[in-house]
Length: 212
Image (cartoon, rainbow, N blue to C red; front, side, top):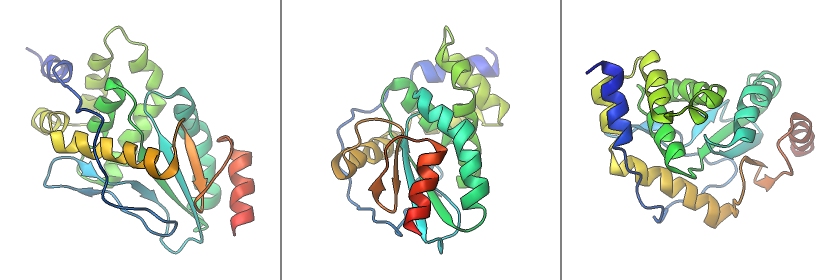
């Protein structure tokens, strides 16, 4: 059996945890729970971009199976990063909002990396190549191909996608969004804790400028 076939078989056997967990922390503008490796099995926490000293915080809840989230990551986030994050004006936070088994599988795979920087890179790749795996006859096979292309080892990937604690962590992140922020659609964006309507660059820029 080829390496890709082994990874695909593992993914096909992957069973997401039941989406019913509690979360034991709160999040306020200016306070973050940055991604860290957790006992070597997956990168945990929200993904944080930019300086801690930035006066404006933008937070996104997004799903890998959401077309609008893919568009935001591919088309809008690069502008936001260049204009506001890289210039020190905005700190950006991404939180997973898992909605289905494919979303859970990709979320787990994206966290099977050496650290937060690599998880950010793989997160962007899965959004940019969303049509490749979502529309495939066997989405898991394409997920495996992408994972292999980005150097994920069989043992590391197997540990991550079968880790109940990692699944529960992703479920907790989603449930916290529902309970604390009333998330009912994705992407949902907040600027300094205030929910904004839509996800266009113009709407974000206007909210950021008003929050300074």
